[in-house]
Amino acid sequence: MNINWKLFLLGAFFTFLAQGGAWAQHNLQFKYSNLGPTWWGWYVVAIPLTWLFLTATKYTVTAFNGQIWANRFIGFSIGIIVYAFLTQWFFDQPITMKIFAQLLLAFGIIMVQIFWK
Image 1 (cartoon, rainbow, N blue to C red):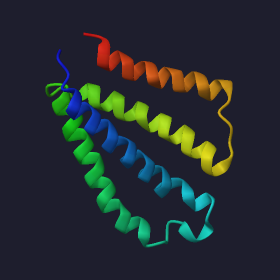
Image 2 (image 1 turned 135 degrees about the vertical axis):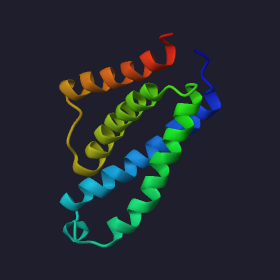
Image 3 (image 1 turned 60 degrees about the horizontal axis):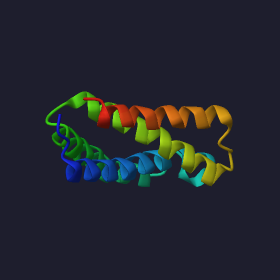
Image 4 (image 1 turned 90 degrees about the vertical axis):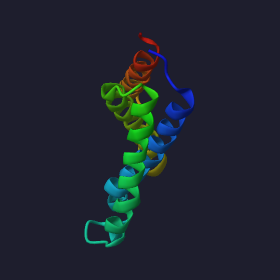
């Protein structure tokens, strides 16, 4: 399978943005009490986040010649990576050996999707 690298990188970029936004939407309420579920801003942010996820999916699926599974595993793995680093950054929760092993697995999943023919 030939990968369209330009579309793949665009899809990965949009996935990083979308996953970061979703992380903020779900977790900043624990750092800033005024950003809980009743804050109207999260509902406004949901619209561009949806656009980011849909655009990322379009680019990644197209990059993999219409193969949907590759997009799902790559999106999941990018989400794990983004989650680990944002959680460490905002909440000072360290990346332990257990989390590091899981990050390696997430990276491995991305490599399988890209290089396993």
